[in-house]
Length: 101
Image (tube, rainbow, N blue to C red; front, top):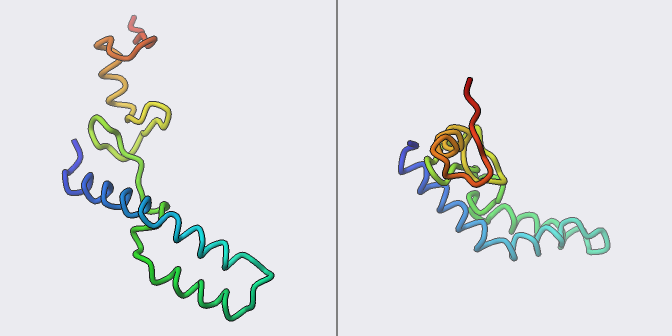
């Protein structure tokens, strides 16, 4: 089980990235638009830099919803390889059969 503080920090980052998504997309579009003046693009870049760092979606870490483990993560199932193996061997994942010999 991962530390509760790490899981909570990741949840805060997820919330912030969702909150600032529209503003961030608008500023990025202004920066990348070649038809606007150089000064306006530079000001948009400065405003983008003033947003909180944790509002960037890149800083959100994929974590297992069962254990909070950050590595060995399957996106489709939203869980780690270890949690998947445990739940699969108990028969709680539909369609998954753990082989043994």
